[in-house]
Length: 130
Image (cartoon, rainbow, N blue to C red; front, side):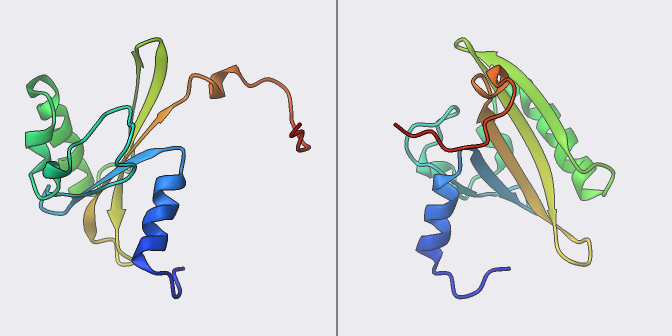
């Protein structure tokens, strides 16, 4: 629940997350992306307002459309991919965003470099800053 948070605080919170996110509205328009600095998949500010189909390589647009259509119809709740990119493993997930009544509002894309996460073994229960 959001209570009394200023937009700049929400934006700072989203930028602090170790995940890149983008939001596409119900009409396939790009409305938001976080981390306007170094990104796995850099995005110019000019993509905000464009249709998502204009922001993907031609060879993958049909898959993007397939995902969006399945989300709009309520057929799927997640689409996941992982790729190797410059010696890093990147995990890409798409999620439909729906209101309390199930109405489709858009799609959230989350991308994360999981290379170091995959190396974790055992447990680390205490803070060990030195």
